[in-house]
Amino acid sequence: MIEVRKFDTLGKADHGWLKANFHFSFAQYFDQRRMHWGALRVWNDDIIAARSGFPPHGHENMEIITYVRKGAITHKDSLGNEGRTEAGDVQVMSAGTGIQHAEYNVDDEETHSFQLWIVPDRQGHKPSWGTKTFPKDARSGKFDVLASGREGDADALRIQADARVLGATIAAGETVEYDLGGRKGYLVPATGKLEIDGEVADARDGVAIADLDTLRVKALEDSEVVLVDTK
Image (cartoon, rainbow, N blue to C red):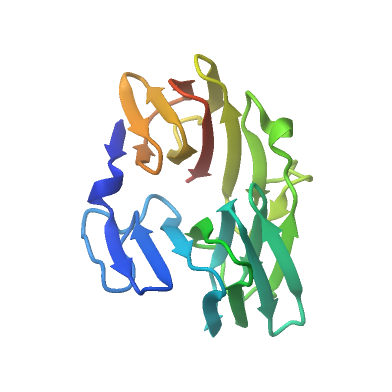
């Protein structure tokens, strides 16, 4: 099963400093058909204006992954962590028993990001935060694991869920495969245009995938892709 969710059909919110697009029900946007995909609860496509951002606020019992597509995001939290995540890189915040954080675009250009929330396998774990640089050439022509709760993914940022967040850059005409093994997948091209089993997805469309053993992604244009593999 493959369902392409066109960008124009996503939920929308415009707060001036923040333009948000919701792949799943979030805040004031509600669609009973788009509540979650497996353990993936939130996929927000955000554009944050220069010199603005999210003031301090709290989360608990959620794995929050931010993939920066353009610009950078600066993080500060109640655990004393501070850091900057730039385009192509990833940060993970495991909210656990509770954490307060702020995220700002401190630069003079817009920040474009995907923010994903994944429901953890259990509640009450110790909160944490981390960020990591993932050079795009390291994942050229293949899916590279960016964040994972699986054993064996030692190079990925750790999350408290049976899930993976993966990234790939795929040249036009190239096909990349991933062993999904019948689990759920949710894929979004950050840039470019893709074909998956005859279905075409443009940049920022969502692709919900189920009951598929091997995922085959063909790039119709040079593309940057983010994929979540979840139970």
